Image (cartoon, rainbow, N blue to C red; front, side, top):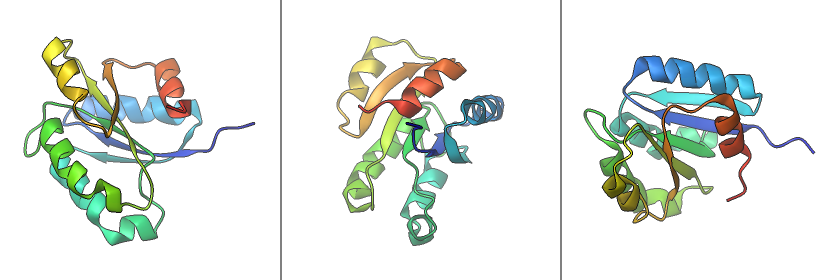
Length: 135
């Protein structure tokens, strides 16, 4: 059985990482669409826009960086928690960071919307695993 194609949202201020991640995600053959944002605020606006749901663009999975300008990953999670229950579908969030700081990893566990904490860089096999995970 072929897994369903996923709508993916990348939230990261590093344009090179976004480009690379987009290429790798597309290479998995498991994505339907990829929306990329340079900060959490733009992503929140996208998720709150009724047209996002109406047009079937709501992501199945979000890959979220922690350290970004305007609105960082923690601030994104705080705001996301306030409206996520009203979304038409659940969204898996993976915090993706180069930080191996235990305090960041432990802090991520305080957010029920966070599926897992993943250390950068991610390769195609890791993205494939996350895209097909039933967790």
